[in-house]
Amino acid sequence: MNVTAIVLAAGAGTRMKSEKPKVVHEVLGKPLIRWVVDTARQAGAEQIICVLGHKREQVEPLVADDTTVVVQLEQKGTADAVAVCRTAVSEGTKSVLVLNGDCPLITPQTLTELVKARETSNAGVAVLTMEAPDPQGYGRIVRDAGGMVECIVEQKDCDEVQAAITECNSGFYCFDASMLFEALAKVDSNNSQGEFYLTDVIQIARESGRAAIGVKAEDVNECLGVNTRVQLAEATKILQLRINHAHMLDGVTIIDPDQAWIGPDVVLENDIEIWPQTFLAGHTHIGEGTVIGYNSRLIDTQVGAQCNIYETVAVDAIIEDGCTCGPRAYLRPGAHLCKGAKVGTHVEIKKSVVGPGSKVPHLSYIGDATIGEGVNIGAGTITCNYDGVNKHATTIGDNTFIGSDTMLVAPVSVGSDVVVGAGSVITDDVPDGALALGRAHQVVKEGYKESLEG
Ligand code: UD1
Ligand code: CA
Image (cartoon, rainbow, N blue to C red; front, side, top):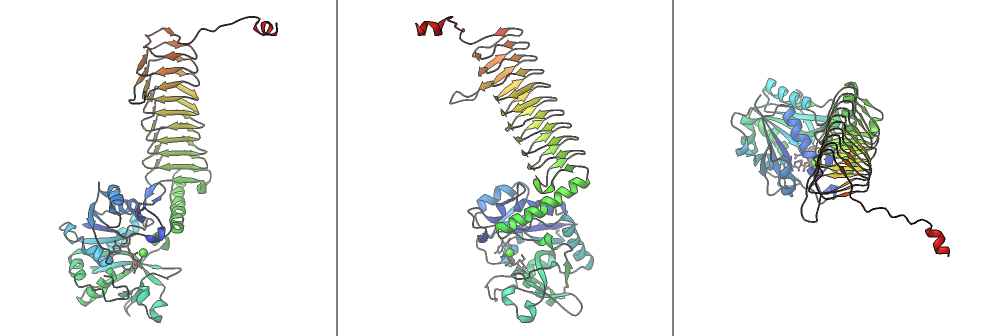
């Protein structure tokens, strides 16, 4: 199928009462417009065009990599929004899907069916319709005696009979590409809103002898648009449960599906346990048999098999098989825990490798460090990686023992099989196998209390 999807996202979304354009708002860690773009891709659209306008500089970076961006300078209506894409649509396109950038619940299956319905019937247009529980505000579907769509009438243009129709326009369409742009050229703005309505294409298509069919959505939720922050929360809840149910049926234990938020691009392997208050987003991948939560937030993080991740925040981190993390660990971008490593309580790791089986169990900051295998980092150890201007590296060799409360003043290198005494401030490199102590000598004055009392 040669399908181009046009995603309409030029509007402001004033009801969000936000400085951000509506389609930038996120559901489960993913902007609204990305949901629609990714769904169009999954439905088989080879080309995706995003129509941007209002505050487009905030939207464009989200879609510029994998879609064609077309700018609609003035929002003159949905027909105009599609018309500005005319020269951007690839040659040879058979079907044009038109999607709303604020409808994140639509599924690839429904879009594929819409395209199929149009192509097999050779209709000029297939409209996805819905039985709206509250039709207020939607365009009404008027069908002819043969069940074909005769026209769509906007709420504001409805007479009494039309207003009573409950079948509504979802705003999703599939058009015959060869007919669409010719028809759009004939759309005028003679209506109550003075806008160019995309829905007028239906009558124009019929006048030129092409049929318009209505495909009713099985699940009306798929058509739910986000206009307010209440609807943003409703969409989040529906998608949260849709995703969680799919994972559970696929072999993931989720203790309370209302208290786990898992993004659509997260990959979970078999036999994972997700405990409450856990948020997994971005391109996070979790391996078999791993336990995550309570209170964990993992974003774009790779976790291996058989790990225990408790109360952990991780962003852009890698955690290999058999690691333990938390409670209360913070893995910042570039943190890499090798096989069997342990990062414990109140530990922050940034842009550092913790070698296989190495442990950073308590109260530490490790930044810009490379730690070898089998290393033990004592409680309270800090890599002093920043001199106020530049960041510097720390390296620690295999099987080294760093005593508690050590300051490693970078750049510094500590060899393998080293012992560093507790409370040391290490400013100079330490060779393999050495003992390093960098602390003041203890002074003991016996009988001091007595001498005070005279
Ligand atoms: C539209 C339909 C209506 C349908 C409803 C479903 C028309 C005339 N009406 O109405 O039948 O029931 O969607 O939600 O199409 N946009 C642009 N540029 C513009 C105008 C709109 O990009 O010039 C974008 C908006 O950002 C939005 C989408 O198109 O994402 C729909 O526009 P909107 O104004 O919300 O249309 P509705 O009045 O809701
Ligand atoms: Ca709308």
